[in-house]
Length: 211
Image 1 (cartoon, helix red, strand yellow):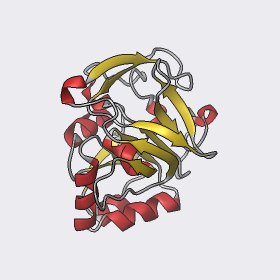
Image 2 (cartoon, helix red, strand yellow):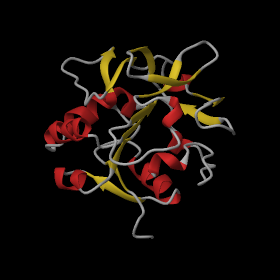
Image 3 (cartoon, one colour):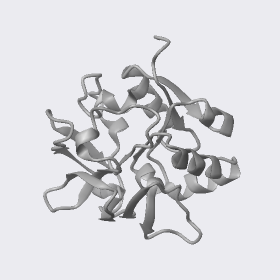
């Protein structure tokens, strides 16, 4: 791998860690699991994967990663949250269990499990104008949704019923031009690692997010 490949970490406490690492490697990143503060310090950006947000929250505290991740967000390390990661990056949660906390970083309120149980999982194609064509094929598994956002957050995609399913904190016009470190944060409720047809041409997530 080229020496100038971005070092992208995946929070490796619970969830679809292996799948995210494989996708990032296919996109040309130097993908690394992150379980300790020193591993977090060694990466240029961090992916918070799909899984169970309350479990990841508890494990992050147990492994001494909760405060370092919050500090990394405050210091401008780029973050990308998928499904449970969306919950973890939001400043506010609807339906949180007792004592559940988030890392925060995006001025948004999200609701857990808004699409129902595991049996209500579904797939759809989403138009994401900031990423251009083709549409993003999205898989929703017990997914959250964004129900409220502040002036510093920008919705990027929504379902036909209006529910917002992709949001960032830096404006749609800047999506393709990410420089690190900038403090840019992006989160989606779907499970991109569950889509089999990944490629480096931006079929599901534009490679700019790992650049």
